[in-house]
Image (tube, helix red, strand yellow):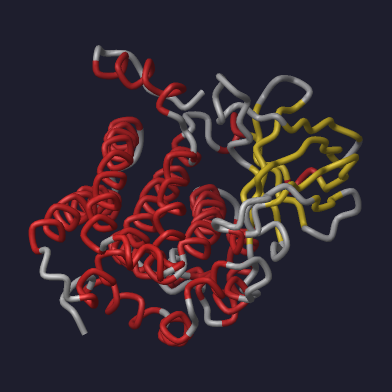
Length: 371
C-alpha cells in the first residue's frame, strides 16, 4: 500500500466500503465498458446518497470528503466517476431547492434517497459557440401539466437513470428545472456515444417528445431560486467532483509508475506535483463550501481552478507516461486508455471560450452569472 491517495482511499472505505472492494477487485477496462454493471453497484452500495445530509436520509459526506471519495473512484473507474458526478450534481441541486422550500419538496428528496434512485442531469446541453447553461428544452403549460420537448446528448446515466432533471425554458421565457421520471411516455434513449473511452458512463442521447409531467414537478427559477444561487451551488458540486474524478484517473498513472519501480524520480515528482497541487486547490474550494460559502465569488474561483487544472492534467499525464516508457505503453492497454480518458476533462462544460469574458469582467467589477 502506497502513501499516494491515502486520505482518498480511507474516505471511500469509510463511506462506501462495499463499493471500494468491488472497484479494487474489478479490472479497469471491465469497469469502463458499456453495460459493466458499475453504476448499478454504485446504487446498490449506497453511493447515491453520498452528498445528502443525514437528516434527509443521506450519508452526510462533507464537500471535502466527497471530493476525496470521487478521486478514489476516478482512480479505479473514471467512467463511473464522471457518470456519478452527474447524479450528485442533480441531487445536490434538488436538495438546495428543497432546503428552503415546502415539506413536500423535502419529502421528495428524502424519498429519492431512500429509493437509491439514480438521477441523470439534463443540464448543459451545449450549442457550439453558445452558453451551455441556456436551456435547449422547452416546457409548455397545458392545464395542470407541462409538456416538454427536447434532447440531451450526451446524457450520462442514460440507461440506468430513474429520474432526469432538466433545465427547461417555459412559454413565458422563464427558466425552470423539470423532474422527469425515466419511464414517462415520450422519454427514449438513442445511441450517441461511439467512443470506447468512458463508455461505462452511459452517455447516450435522451430524447423527450411530448413528455407530459405534473406542474408540481417543474420548479420555476424565478419563484424558487430568484438569484440563481441554488443552481450555482449545484454547479459547484459538479465542478469539484468532476475535477476530483479526473485527478483520480491521473493518479492511477502515478500508481502504475510507483509499481513499475522505474526509479525515474524526477519524472514521477513532476507529475505528482501537478496532481497534488491541483487536488489541494479543489480541497480548498470544498472547505469553503463546507463553511457555507456560496454564490459568485467561489464559483469564479472554482472555474479558474478548473481551467488551470486542465493544463496541469495534460502535463502530469504526459510526464507519467514518458516515465513509464514505451514498452509499458505498448504492453498495457490501461495506460493508453487512462491517457485518452484524462483528456475528456477539457470537454466538460463550461468551455473556456464561453466563460472567459464573464470571468474577466467579474474581476473588473461586473456581476457573474452562468447565463
